[in-house]
Each structure stands twice: as C-alpha cells, then as structure tokens.
Figure (cartoon, rainbow, N blue to C red):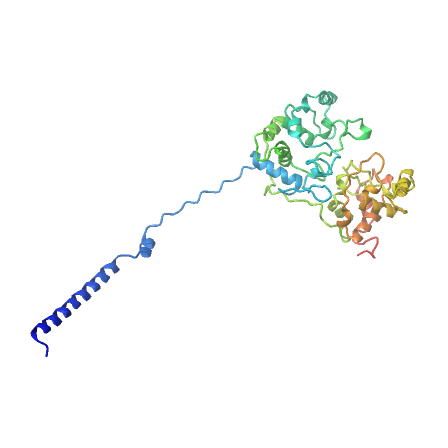
Length: 389
C-alpha cells in the first residue's frame, strides 16, 4: 500500500491535471469568441472599389483621325508589301495608284512620300496660282470648288475634294494639256468617302512620316476653315471601325458581272460603259473590247510583242484573257504598265471566261448609253461558258 506521502503526491498530480485541463478548455472557449483571421476579413466592412468610367475616345482627336485614315487607305493598321510590290487596299483604294513606300509598285499618281512638307509649298507655286486664275470666275465643273488653299492641310483636303483644282505637273490626262487629273472625286461612286473619312485620310498623310507624333495633324481645323462650318460625324455612323475591302476576294462564276468588276476593282482604273459602278475610271483604257480587241491583235505593236515572246494571243478572247492574267504582255499605247499581275490567283476559271465574254460584247457605240442596257443583255445567272465550273 502506498504511504501517506505517495497518496499526497498522487492527489497533487490529479489536481494539477484537472486545473491544466480546465485552463486549456477556458482558453479554447475564449479564443473561439474571437474571429479567426479569415472570419475577421469576411466580417470587416468592404470598401467598394470604384472603377473609373471608360473614357469615350474622341473621334476627332489627331490620334483617332490618323488611325481611321490608315484603315481607310490600307484596310489594316499593319500594311505590308506583298510579293508583287503592292500594299493592301482599304475603302479608299489610295495605294493602288499612289506611292507610299520606296519598294511599292505604284506610280500612276503622284508620290505621297513627303506630302506633309510638300503640301505647305504647293499653294505658293506659280502653277497653283495659274489654276486659281483659271477658276477665278467659275468654279471647277466636277467639284464646284475653286482653288483657295492657304495651308498645307487645306491643300491636301482640296486635292481629295477637287483633284482638278491643282494637277501635279506630269500627272494630267494626256488629252487635257495637263489640266485634268486622273484622280476621281473621292466623295462620289464607287468610293463615296464622307467628310469624316476624307479628313481622316488627310490626317494620316500629315502624320505618316512621323509615327506617334501628331503635332502636324491640323486637318480638322483646316477643314472647318476651308468649308466654313463645323465638322461632324455622319448621322448613320455607328462604329468608326472601317471594314477592309480587300482586293484578295475571289471572282466566282456564280457572281454577276457587276460583282466581279467590284471584287476585282476593275473600276479603279477602267471605265466599262455597261457597268454602273465603273463609270469613273480614267487610268486604264475604256473596256470596249468588241471594238478594240481585234484591232489591237492586228496592230504592229502587238505583232512586235508576239515576235519578242511577250504576247501570244491569236483571237480576241485570248487577247482579253491575256490582258487580265499577263497585263505586261502588251500595254496599250498612251497607257502605263502597272496593272496588278496576280489576277490568276483571284479568278476562278469560269469567272475569268465569264468576264472575258462579257467584255467582248461591249463596243464604242455603248459608251454614251445607259449603263444598265448592256447588263440586261447578259443573263447574270448563267455563264456564257457553262463548261467552266
């Protein structure tokens, strides 16, 4: 049996154990009344984070105008030359004729490199003053404007609204004595650029040689001073994103003739008497090929091209197809070589023959006729050559 001392030690140990247990339980209960760090975070009042309202981008800011102008010109904000030396084309089709970079294959219209600096000099030239004197009494017929640019921005705008108000020397139509421009009025069919779009194109031209620097973009003020009214957005403008109208579309046999002409951008350079959209092209020959194809085949210039191995057509239809697929084979007198040479990748065989057959129905007597008359003569739902599918 344990002695008294042992019994006292056992009792003391039991008492200590009981006290320690009670202390631990008390501590646990006390701690439980306090929130855990996670509970405390959840319980704390949450201060709402105020999200700043997105700022509406000012469509008339120099940066916005330049960005939109680039899209209208190229259809993309990263234009690159293709293998044929061509830049992509946007709604304005500007790069089809104008030079923007050194390696580009486009020289039909004035070189636009350095245009911002050059624009300030144009209104001071003797040649510009001669044009001003020509239209001093009566406005230029097509645009209804008179040459009156005082600043570089006004000159760039004037050249878009009234190409005949000043024609760069060497770029006038051959039979106009240098007084009429090859360039169409961009507000009209088929481009139909509105005032905002034309201002955006001019803004890009002012800034293109100094990327990121918009200090030279004065075109909005220039436009308002030139036309003496405030520039506003078109009423129907929902989005300022300009959709690219790419020349890479493929012409299909199922396409109506007018659609093929639009897809392939024939109207940019050629007048086609029978197609409503193709009434302004002045850069290439008028496409009255029922009259002209046979004459060109028989010409000494074409026979020379055959002898040199450049051309090989022996029938009018072969000539038309050759002129589309290999335009450098024979260049019509008084016109420059510059037609795109990649149409073999843009036409289906059926569409190519459909267009060739159609062009061979057009003669010079149709030049002054209603453009809809010839289209009615060809059933657009059927191919003249059903075997090409």
